Image (tube, rainbow, N blue to C red):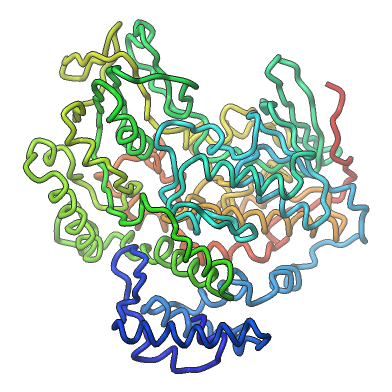
Length: 628
């Protein structure tokens, strides 16, 4: 793709230079090409790059939609629908995002321009979403304040310090489009991700606009002034109130932790804590550790601690589907960094391949085929091939251990729950000091864990790898909308809904990020956050432009969208009757995951339509601390 853009030569899009299709989610570094062809490409690249460095312009600097679609299809050796090329022109930098975004923004109700100080924002949360929202407001000149309970930026990456913590999405995909980085590892560990988040925030100058160490406990909308008053509580209990036109809730999906209320937990004499609250300086040498849960966090914790402890006992309610990943432990080679930094267009094409492989490519396997007559642990033909591949991998890893194999092969379809990456999980299970218990936990006592069968397992330390309150968005913040409506009550506690996952009738000027039904089926949430940030920022600009002080989602738009989400989700694997997961709430409704492809959501959020909102034009004060 680089050669074609630099030279304009059509032969680089034709045989014998067309790569073969990638199997699974591998990097496919050779492209499946003959070694002689590979060398021919390298030689031609040397010539083209030398000319470019000497001032020769790129022949195809900004391919149009049709041209870009053709390039994409050659790049991944698959059919790529045209909507990806439309998105790609903006995301890959081949079209000015400002031209795409603002030119088509609807005019709405106009009463003349307003002073920019009359539209302001409070952002709750300084993690991924909070940083994205702040970047949008900065670019648009809208004043804002960020509030966060932690002592630094990063959100979940600041809080989660457990052993083995890291991304399960390629680092070059788990990145802001506006802040590329030369990653040390293909799958970064938590310290590097946390440092990245902090460095991006600092680079944007967010420190002076952020109040850290303040937990938001309440927010209330005032219909007379069309403003939000947000109450923050410091560590010493002191409360301060902040006022702004717009409230952006960027508290995240994976917060707060979910800790089971187990009988006898108070009797346990050793340390017991959630994985997201790992104690600083904890020494596990020679300890017997019980890990309750076998999901994403446990999958990282267990391999990390299994070599330094006396015993590790894992309590598993249901097994997980796990995929191998060849480069999971690898450092990024210096030559890859050189390509990223010195070769034009290389980074955007490298990232496009990751976007395709880790995001929407898997969408076909998520659909339940009502005519499917095969294995009940699959839902369609493609899904069944995936099941067979993953089962074969588990059998290979646990060869000679039929006892572990019986506990480790799921009986539900792949992708019905979150797919995990093998970071040494199976190797850890084979260690003599690691025991996998496929029984539910009934309770604790003074020195261990008791299962539902009455078996007692001694432990010195208990780790709750039990997930988060994903169906209680914004919990425990008390949010009061128009007329004193309580958001948690509107949502019946654990049934959150929002138009585009962002807005709720009765709660004007409130925008949610990582809200209901916005968790992507695969890949990185960061780009979904950027779609939401763009939508929110554009809405704020439209409010400024048209003299609007409050925007409130119309109930009929909200209801129609919720119905569309539910109908779409009902046909996907997350609604499979054999599966219980954090995707669903207590009522069996999928509340976390988006049923849309990433490209669909991008198009949904490009151009906010004021026709979806009731708008008002009362005055509003600037963002400032109030007496409190």
